[in-house]
Length: 263
Image 1 (cartoon, rainbow, N blue to C red):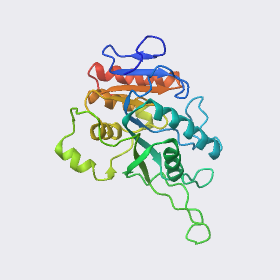
Image 2: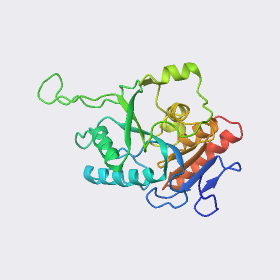
Image 3: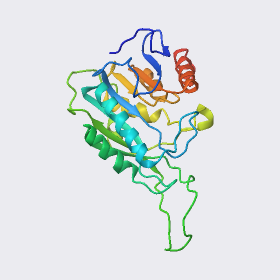
Image 4: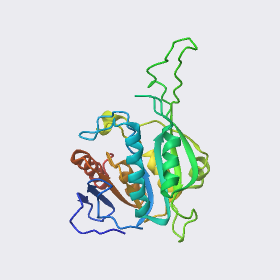
């Protein structure tokens, strides 16, 4: 699975089911190449969210270069039948309109990922709208889609190479294989992170696209939600983040789950 020596790990649960690395996904050496079954992540959107010391408002071209670099690294860490669930926005309006989803998928294919499908996540939150452009006029109106997307990609082959134990119910399978998911987002205040996603998101991805005991990676761990969902579903979760603050937050949330409390 991974090099589980003390060096390089910020945190390891006693059962080695939850592992945290403080560092940059581009530089870490603790996770072995070809060891990851599923990646579930939501990278920075480059819309000037305040992630501690991380700069989230770089020029769009630089953002795409960064995307190419971290995707190349993640591609190398995955097994040949590894899957990749990537939560990204459809587009970007702050600082200039950009077709984020289309650009990121283009990069993913260039890196070597193969495309499978896309889930539209309807958060049911239209209140984030802040501008209409030219109000009641064709002069310069803004169109803002109140949804996010989850791109389903894979490394080399879609069908799993080994037989394993699935943990998804019949009703969950029927509901979640419909590519429109409707559930609420997560509270920044409750979690203590500026851009958390709800456990529901990685929970669905993990149950749909991995077996029990598979290894799940989140290269932009943040508050550790993917690791929580991995633990709840009897998978091994590995999270990477450059922030000590968020590594500690994720550790605290994991230990609450281990001790039987609700995170």
